[in-house]
Length: 285
Length: 310
Image (cartoon, each protein chain N blue to C red):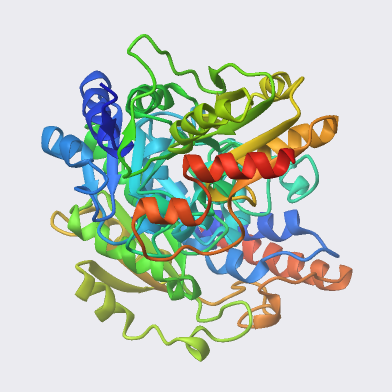
């Protein structure tokens, strides 16, 4: 059971992470706001609550691994790595610039703390299976976490990987689905409906749990539930809001990948700063 | 004496030896382990063998994860599928970060035979050569295949190893040492040079003997590493001859012929004729019939040479 104090700490960190995401993206340039913000609470809980991770040694062989399969949301991971000290915070502003270590999509050979290369959707879960198989071969106790988008589940390879993980009983693997309901152009279901997604994963041999992906109590409990599985790999289906935390971005498909004006960016920063102050105040009360 | 062995058979034996020598080697297959000959490894080292089923994309991505964790994965399927079916996965997850995954394409080229165009890889070298960081190796016989199978494990990056199911004569004795990035002159001759790879090295050597009767001495060069190409050696081997020829069981677009032309065009001193499949798909037939149809039997190579030299 996670203490209320710990939940408040995580909520404060999630608020800070969102602020870092929008700050690094800045005004005037197209960025993947929606998916980065919808994943922020899940990424926060992984790095600051669940994972065994030494920021001073991001290549520690026994570290837990996190792979951002929905690669366009990597700014959320960059923010977490910077808040942990793996990357300098000031480097975040170089996102996607020529010569930056922070590529537009995850590149393990550019950025300390990244575990693989993604960006073409649908490939991450197979890769995560490989990381988990290696742990078993090497007798290591690390765990692997893979975050997928719900639109990404349209890719057939996800379901190949979803058959592989139970086949090898990869109980050291946890998949998370950031189920914000939107893809690049419109609703996920407009092209291919994923539901009943819980039944689909269960039929493939997974332990499945649905949660509110912005409720830190539920997220932490689900992560603990996932790591207690001894027979099947676990998948957490996290219902989220695309663009969560910036009201004019929330649930707007236009902000999957878009530029904010100066005024919009200032408004977004103001809203996220107010949220950070609110949860910080809550903690000290 | 000239024993004929399929390169895929030599590979299966070498992979077993490699498994004994290197515990970090893992092998993945996509439901073809008896055809690809990884069955020998699978029986000896079941804990390091994964049959991912008929799922090449899943296979190579899983291999990338294993490689990122310190293993040397050998991924196996027919040449067409290991290259084309999972090209995007190979590009982003393997070639881009330079992970040491070894992609082994079996039953490559026209000599795949009766299964027809879907299974005859005529574009695989082109696809793999186009990827940054990817090395491309096409061994000529069983001796070179055994050595290449071991050598690519030492190569720090990803490799595509192209193998066939066509019994091919032994060209090297056991003293031969395959080296990544080196080509080998198989026959001396000053009138023309035949750059060949894979099964076509033996065919080129036979063609060279036929050409003696036409009063021509052909130099024959085995280009078993198509990438990284030994550029200096291409220039050196093409020096002083009337014309250079490339011979490959592959499309003349993007493979060995293109690679050699790219080098020689910069010098523009030696004209080149590319022998291979001329921008067409394959079709069902026996291996030898198909080679003959595409002018890749010794007599066909000879005719092309005589025509080009006028």
